[in-house]
Length: 254
Ligand SMILES: Nc1ncnc2c1ncn2[C@@H]1O[C@H](COP(=O)(O)OP(=O)(O)OP(=O)(O)O)[C@@H](O)[C@H]1O
Ligand SMILES: [Mg+2]
Image 1 (cartoon, rainbow, N blue to C red):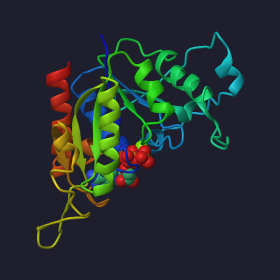
Image 2: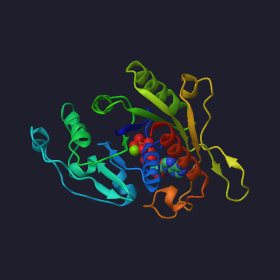
Image 3: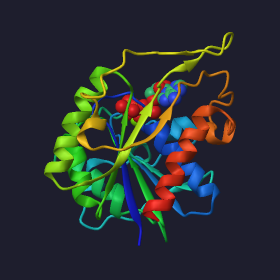
């Protein structure tokens, strides 16, 4: 049986795609059969992050058809990747609303020739709108990994996501705190990048376990732009933390 794990956040830009991609690659390296859905139709970043492209633009007509041909994922770094970007033309204005968004989500989950998978990771846009709700309905017994930065706003919005998940009885595997700080290259001291939300207000006080604390990693460390950090700089502290998330998913969910 495939275990489904959604990487979600209330606030945008906190690192969902980065964490999902690195976890996917790390687990694939260990021989786990991993699929990764980039369900962010408004900003499908995963293909660009690893430098793959594919243009099989779907029109709304093919989405509406009852019988649609299955789509092949793109296998890269051992991960079967399916992105909304593969189905939408690059210059297509995205003014889609429900139910078209729902049909696209259905296609990403069910109309892909995944083959046998141990784990299906899903990268979603931030928030708790129609698209996310639809995905949680389409995926069988999903687990959620929440991604936050130490900022107040990330936890403010994250708390809303936690409430929604709890109300829908969707299981939260834990939270990843990303961009926790930056090691000063000259003195080695750790600098904070953001204000720190209080522990009492943070999502950790809502029963979300902290899976890892991933420091900010400058581009100079992650030298190859298209190689996920766990491969490009496996010894970087951020990689250890990302590998720890992968290890916990493997040991608890698989
Ligand atoms: N630990 C980190 N160190 C350095 N840069 C990071 C780190 N985590 C994420 N980033 C960078 O921050 C930006 C946002 O990350 P990412 O795209 O993964 O966030 P996201 O939550 O998926 O965003 P969105 O909500 O737009 O989908 C990217 O440019 C990414 O490379
Ligand atoms: Mg993203």
